[in-house]
Length: 82
Image (cartoon, rainbow, N blue to C red):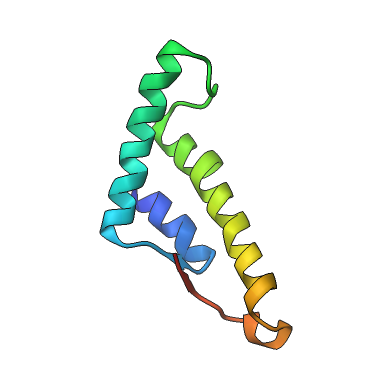
């Protein structure tokens, strides 16, 4: 797990369990392996994948959560546990 990844998620108000971080690490390993066989992504560096694939995707999920479940006044300091 990357501390930078954890910090970027914290800035969005997203916390993950250790199991979830491990799952992202495993997904990264699988992505890089499969990328050797077929061109899935040009981004394969660990920190870049965390930021440009995982953080970006989780940010969208966070925004979706806010707009579908919380009222405008409640989303000032929301923290989401995915």
